Amino acid sequence: MSDVEIDIAALERRMDGALHALRSDFASLRTGRASASMLDPVTVEAYGSSMPVSQLGTITVPEPRLVVVNVWDKALVNTVDKAIRNSGLGINPQMDGTILRLPIPELNEERRRDLARVAGQYAEQARVAVRNVRRDGMDHLKRAKAAGMSEDDEKLWHDEIQELTDAAIRKIDAALSAKQDEIMQV
Image 1 (cartoon, helix red, strand yellow):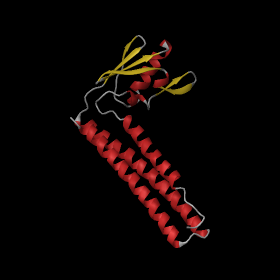
Image 2 (cartoon, helix red, strand yellow):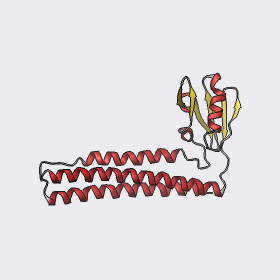
Image 3 (cartoon, helix red, strand yellow):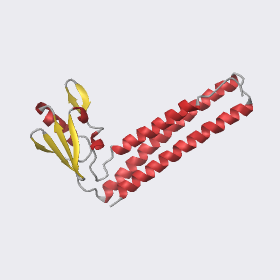
Image 4 (tube, helix red, strand yellow):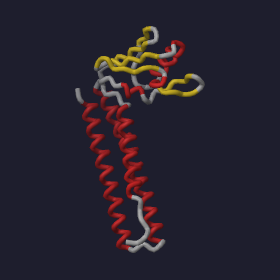
């Protein structure tokens, strides 16, 4: 082999990062079951900056269809309530002092289809991220070829990058399929 090496481990790490981001996005999708992670995308203007709800109170899931947020600062209860209502999650908190109870309603068929479509969009964003990493690897490969890499080595690295990409896309498709099955369960 030539002395020019392609950092496959770095490409794999970046592709795994896209999969990790996808799983994080999937965790924020409401599937009809309570989950503390569903509040991850909700941010609240507090103390002069935008903060996630998890940094303003304790989030617990005492029942399968209920999330409870115990806000630490009484002055922020209304602000947290408003942020959750305006978040697009379709949840209306019930206030009880510094405690917000978030009952999770059953999803109707139309909302389930919408969530499955959103999951598909998240998966497509992850696929695009993986393809961008592949493109970066191929660009590096072209520069290495111009610097004197043999055609055999180029073919070897090209195949390895492509296999890595295909494996990452399969993982994304499997995660999407599992999430869509979870969403569509009645």
